Image 1 (tube, one colour):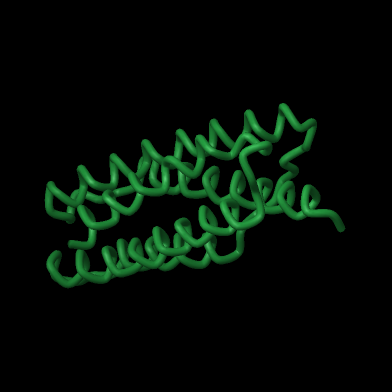
Image 2 (image 1 turned 120 degrees about the vertical axis):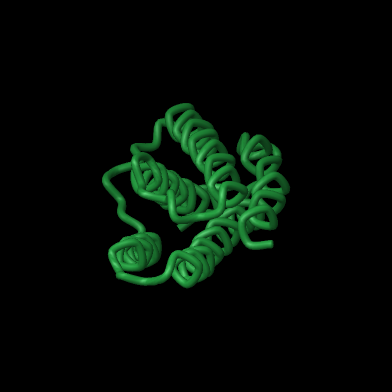
Length: 145
């Protein structure tokens, strides 16, 4: 396996996780959250959509098929978010649990950004993705506090 193969594998996984996160949050019931957190999640979804688009373009340019990869960690976290929503809890408790799970999701997302930075370089056209990292850190603070 070459460094480029490793980068392509990371890009496919990154594309998949963005696609899954996008699918989960589109239409997700979050009205129990404070308005500021809802707005933060909207900002997060914007970053997710942008990352998915950029990653898709990089994969296409490199003639790499993103395949139907599913990120099991994202699946587990979004399933946990679904369970929190369905529980009959006080909105404040529900919101706290939800925000903690979103914190895990964003932290995992950031780890994947860092992996791309680690394995990539300027020649790989990933600089647009790396520039999104600081915005994601800012959104995380907005959601988590």
